[in-house]
Length: 208
Image 1 (cartoon, rainbow, N blue to C red):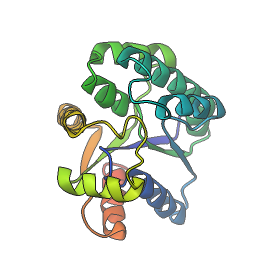
Image 2: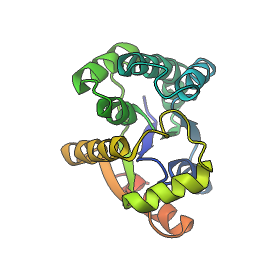
Image 3: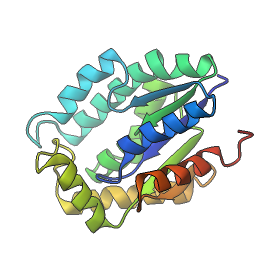
Image 4: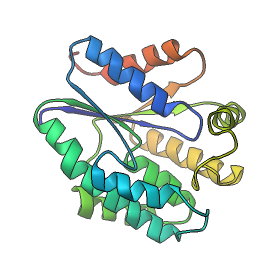
């Protein structure tokens, strides 16, 4: 694969989806062939699984079942969208990837080694070249999420503050353990300011 794979991670309300789109636009303006995608989703099969994962009651699935569904969606996404784009030399920007499964299902009690084993089976263990971890103080992130969702969060986003604090802690621990892949990015401030930070972090260590 000759392309470049960039994922954006972070808890609820930090602006991942907006910034993934803005980062893609900034790279396109620089002449880069970009594929913008998301998880769960990003391929027809994975989008079908997304509805199962995000709709319904909060306890609709056990944590283990949830991990299996995410792994299945990701396997289709990787096979049908990500790997073909990388093979043609494109830059793939993905709103969430495996580290979200590690954090969200890990916070629900699923062992990290089990999540990575599922990833190895379903997606060949594919990891991003660069993972950009957006962060905000918990209160500001929660306020943004509430403004975005209007009190109607999906079944995972609507879990309690203690759960989301565990998610944030796990994501930060992954970033500290894998410093070659991760970059911390401050998500505070105007959208264009955050996008500039992301662009610098995305291109850090590349020739572009």
